[in-house]
Image (tube, rainbow, N blue to C red; front, side, top):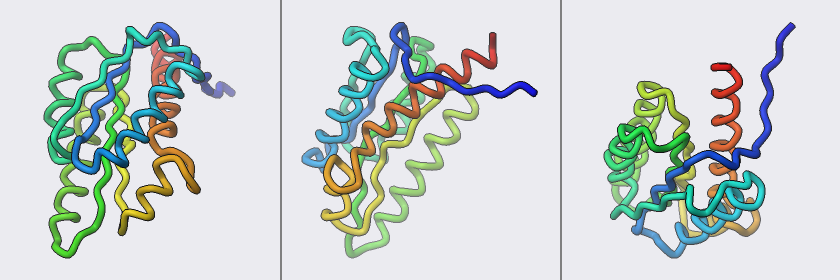
Length: 156
């Protein structure tokens, strides 16, 4: 029996983090969690991390597609927070963002990790950006590191 497991250290990897400016007071904490995890746990060199700011979650798929097509990155981390409002706008943005990112990842064979909070209120977003429920930006970085190594193990 062959079992593939992976480490999270990936010091030579090049990783892009794409962050939405909308709800930046939440997203800044997600970004801090991602960077800390990449550098401290994944031992990724600072110069191998690229951060790209976009207006909102809806713009994530386009910019990530362009980054992926450069073939400069081993993984991309998507960070945003989509908080329910009083209109159905929330559902449209959340669906388009998640579907778009999934499609890009699958068709390009590159890990795109989903550090996008989709919450009912600001309190839930705050809890997932570094308080009660941990930091989903950090979780997305860990997933990216592990996926890079799993893909490399399979290819080897």
